[in-house]
Every structure is written in structure tokens, then in C-alpha cells.
Length: 508
Picture 1 (tube, rainbow, N blue to C red):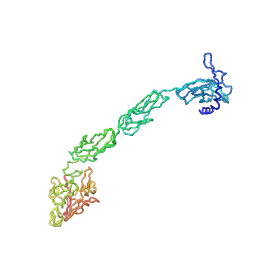
Picture 2: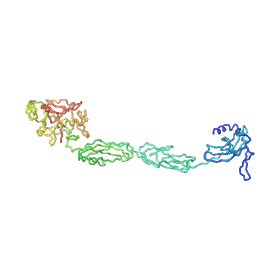
Picture 3: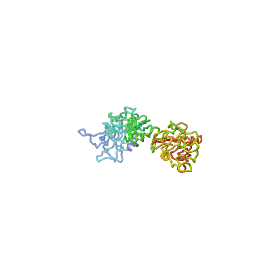
């Protein structure tokens, strides 16, 4: 082809003026068939191996000089004047003096004119003008690599690949289209983009013959997240509570419905409204799973506990803890209220808290009448807890009845070591400080920092909390064990028994 370009560039300068002298020379026998005439210098031969873009062209040469001294080839053009002719130089002749060249880059379904030529210097001889027509290979089928596809994420893309047959089709270009661009679009390269939920058909059509193939597209956006109104649900055996789906995302999810299930129906079951029923003590997980097949779900851990007495909560410990402090009329109505102050072992609150008014002594710390193991401090009975007197001196048992009582030192220790204690200021907007106690099962109580009462004055209110246990200090019976806390920590302590402290009851 380099030779073709080289000669094409000089064609108009050297060759065109000489073409007028090219004579049509074609020898035929008696039957009208072409034959080599040895008197002719150049003869145009046949065209063969014709395709839609190329052809093999032949000619015959009777040279009175060596080939190396002359340029021999074939020129071709779409017009008979050969004004835009392309010349292809032959590099050799076969044993019959035949030259063969390839014409390429042709247009399909087009008639071309060609003739053999020989040039030596300025002298040019040409053979007869002949014609050939290129072929047009029509498309007979179009197919896609997918006949259907489902998108589960709006915005995702898919590349469809079209196969046009036959492989040598002349024009294999195609056009793409979507019958519903609100669902899916397609560009000129077959890239399909999910736009919205629904169904669409993507079509590819061959520009030649209009052969068509289609792919059915479904867009069904998956749910990607589900949120519940709680992730932990403590529930007493036999009770029920409703879980609520607070959000399902994305907003354009195709199917936002869910199915509820329990990992252990024997512990707790759930209906399709999200209502959980506690059946047996233990722990299980309630799941809300999307119905769209995405597998997206949200879960809530359910802790089924023993039935609690009214006014108590199950923290997963050895006893139930009251939700509020004690007053002379029962439990106070809300957890931030401090309730009444009680001297240790007294069942009524006082206006003054000091030894002379303390009911379990005769006016001083050395005249104790109960819960004493040392004669230095009064009457010895060797009693150390309220249960030793059948809870006669337990304010919680006297006021609340049943199995309510003041917690033991061991029960306070259990609460202190098995729960998290968070210092809270302005508890739920009430202006009250205290400790928020959360159990591992998710249940919790609030203990206000109500301080203590000594003589007739409440001290350390808002900074300390003091809560009595049912136990005295055995090495100094003038003092009883308590739990106290401040912003810095939670501690096991002891205080003079006459001091007014708070009571947080427990029940068995």
C-alpha cells in the first residue's frame, strides 16, 4: 500500500496526461474468449476473491524490457475517467507473466473500474477497462448475552453485549432503546442504568435489515437498613410488649414490608404486628427481616425474667429492685423523688436525727437495745440483720408488706459490681442529680443523690446518695452498713445508725 500511495501522489503529474494514449487492447480467440496476444504489452485480467471491502485484480504483461526497469500494476477507480484512481504496483509476475494485486479499503456494494498498466519512464501502456462490484453482506441475526436482568440498587449499571451475525456482515452497527426510561435507560454502548422501580425492555436493532433482540429489565430496589424502636427488651414471663419498626431505608425501596420471627419461640414469640410475648425465663432474639429477598434485618434482644412485684424491676440479680425510694406511705411516685429519711432500724421518719432521739437506744450510742454484740455499747443480743427479728425493724417490710424489705449488704454489693453506674445531672430534666444503674439485661433504676439528714438538716443533697442496708457493722455495732456514691464513684460504707438515710427496697 506504500507503493500505492506513492504512485497515487504522482498520478496526476505523470500518468493522467498519458492515459489518453492508452489504447484498449484485448485479444480474443475465435470463440470470443480472451487470450494473451504477444503483440500486446499489457492486458487486463479478471477480478476474483471479491468481498465488501477488497478484491484481487489481475493482468498480463508482454514486456520488451526487464520488469525491474518498469512499473507494472493495476489502477482502479469508481469512475471511468480514473481521475481519482488508486494505483497498486505489482512486485512480481508469475510464470505466465501474470501480475496479481489486492485492492483494499473499498466501499461495499459499489462498482469499480480497473485496468492493468505498465510504465517505463514517461511511456505508459494500459490494458482494457474492466469492472467489478463489491459485495454487501447483510445481517441475518442479532442476539444479546442476557435475555433478562434484575437490578436491586437504583443507579447500578449493566453492560449488554450484542452479537451481530454473520461475523463478516458489512454493516454491524446497532441502535439501542428502552421502552420505559423511567425504569431503565441505555446508551449507545449498551450500558443500561437502573432509574426507578418497575419493568422495562431494552432493545438492540441492527441498522441493516432491522434484526432485533431484547432484554427484560426489572428494577426492584432492595431495603438496605431497618431500625427498631429498641434493641433490648426486658420482659417478665407472661407479659407482652410491642416492637415498632421506626425506619426502613432507602425511601425508594421497592418492597418495604417485613416479617417478624423469634429465634426461640419457647422463650418469647412474636406476631406479625411485632407484639412480643414472654413465655419462659431466658434470652432470645426477635428479628424483623425485609420481604424483598435482600436479607436485610433488624434485631432486638429479649430478656425474659421472673414476674416482678408491682413497683419493681428485674435486673437479672438475686432480688427484684424497687423502681423508687421508700416513703411513709409507700414507694414514691417517680424515681427522681428522694422519699423519706430513716434512721437505721426505725420504721418512721423523724424531724431530728441524733442519738437522743434514736429509738434503738436509750439516749446514747452506749445504750443500744438491739443489734449489738459488744456490752460496751449496751444490751448484747448478737443480732446483725433485720431478719433476726423477723423484719420487725425493717421499714420497707412494715410499710410495703409482702416480701418487700431493705436490701442486705451482700445485695448492695451485687448491684454495685454487676451493673454499670452512670452519674447523671438534671435527670430527665428534673434538676435532680444521681446515679443511673443499668443491668446487663437492659433494665435500669435511678438512685437520686438526696444526701442524708443529721440533727434537723439535710446535707450533701445533689452531690451524695446514702442508702441503708439491713446489716450492722459487726466490729462496731453503733454503725450500720450502707451504699453511698458521688460523682467520683460508688462505695460500700457505714454510718452512725441514728443518721437519716434513704431506703431503696427489694423483693424476693
